[in-house]
Figure: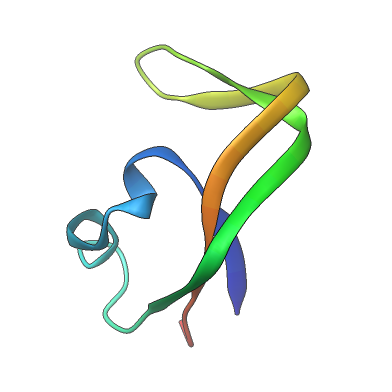
Length: 58
């Protein structure tokens, strides 16, 4: 499965705490959403978000 990840999930050490097998297959930009900072980063309408494409069999 491929998933768009941003923030702390672009860090391999953080990802390895969530899934056991993965690879990053490229950088990505998500159009139409923007990051909202807070206790838990979220996405809200408007803007763009930079991240990566994470590939995992899990």
